[in-house]
Amino acid sequence: QDKKTGKSRQYTANDTTNKTIAGNQVVDIKEDNKEIIWLSSFNGISGVDVESDSIVSFNSKNGLAGNWASPMVVDSFNRIWLGVSGGLMMLDQDRRHFKTFTLNDGLPSVGFPEHAGVHLRNGNIIFPSNNGYILFNPANFRQEQTKPEFYIAGYSVFNKNYPAISEEEQ
Image 1: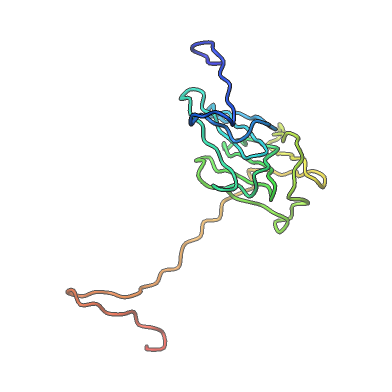
Image 2: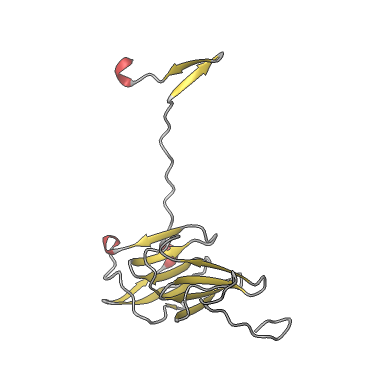
């Protein structure tokens, strides 16, 4: 319900405007600390900003490992953790980058049933999976910061181009 007008608004995947959510079968609903309402569905996830009446959606075409999105939790860093077909994913607080965790990272399953995820009082997150549950502390996750290697492919002096010198030529 809109706080200013008191009116309710229905969002659907069938809307012919740009106010469309990813799917009509909503599995989980969470609110982040910027008051964006996040919906998970069998067709992806959507963030609804009721204040600005705008929606952003993600699916397998723009970042999700799979469209089937089920449990979702917003951690204390305002990152969104979600279980999708294909793994456990984390959407950063800027809502621009995803990190995917799979069996190779130690998960018991990359499938998640249609149940909600829970942010526990101690800060841990618990997710149901198709093979038990996943319990972790999101504060322990740190994005790797890698610096790219630096190479010189060539150089120019007074508009004369010189190729790079390979190790064999030295």
